[in-house]
Length: 111
Length: 116
Image (cartoon, rainbow over all chains, first blue to last red; front, side, top):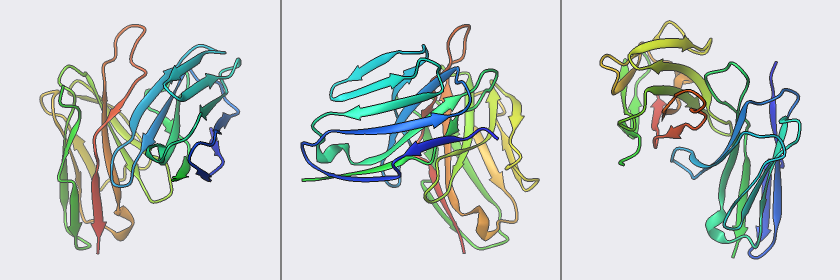
């Protein structure tokens, strides 16, 4: 069974704090995407990583893909209330045509 | 670029009724995917189309579910004889797949189905 685990499941922090969420699997991904989803809406694509060791930055968000392409992390600097939402990682395994999603990290940033 | 659209956004139906959802993908995208998301879970893959051909179905797609993409543009997902366990958010996504590309899927806003 191919499992994609995200941690923590829930995270509540004060505005201005930094945080990191993790996405781990025992299998190698051909690519990995991070999405943010708000209640009642579809996931919105934040970033795609493909190469082992790759680091991408999107304003205050930094995404890292593990060297072995089995894990990834999302770091948010100086969190803001607008960052509140469900953060989902989704991986594509070699030869797969669909994405396999983790259960997500639900982030709440308190003003 | 208007993004992926889905209709209706919400549907409440009684157990045993049939429902149909529509998805309009991003116009130049050749692949279209259907996912289902239940409360507290990430989306789960149901099926996908390459142009008008349905190329893969998940084990989650029971015989009561059928999807079509007749002209390679919009797609419909029909659920027959709905059950309470079908209550979920049904998400559509599209992507442009070509040599060396196609990792990124763009999602619509979803259709929230409630079966009473």
